[in-house]
Image (cartoon, rainbow, N blue to C red):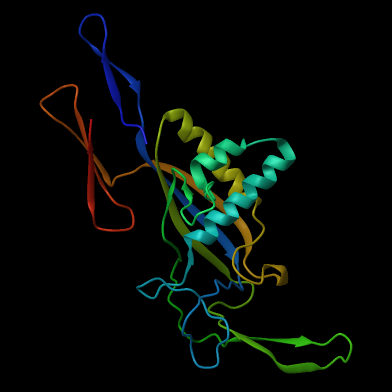
Length: 243
């Protein structure tokens, strides 16, 4: 990622050649229940498909699902309108490894690890949801065809998930990304598992951009040196870069 650079001009004044600032895009996804985020690992007794939770027990989507759905939406827009350009998607979201290895080509945007539901801790008062697969030939249920899924919200209830996307951007890149984030998220029909059965329908997506408060810029005594201190988004590690 680029850092602000300065160059001397006539009169001894400094002129910004590039100006990248840490920007945060806050995303709000308003869904309609039922919603299933499909957690793995141990679940409650009798539950076949449970909700994903962050380390504090909050119901959430993992960022890989959000990022994947955004990529799908951008690809669909690209196929219909020719925009955004494939290089735009690769730059900001990354791509699969070009060498065939396990290391991906990372994008320049950073997503929150967990996109949490507002007031997301389940009260446990909503009973689980049951589904039965019916054999089309016999009209009867097969052995083991009963699926029990966790259901924190009643059908039809509004559920809001929030998360943030961060990057170091110029003003032009900020405006362009804001445009495509809004178009992309609002094109997505549903989130989570069982989307083909009416789960996780998107009612509305809103995206707002803000300066990222987690980055400090400290100037040294040398006017040609800028020290950037930034807190890593998903850890407590303090990283810095000197130019």
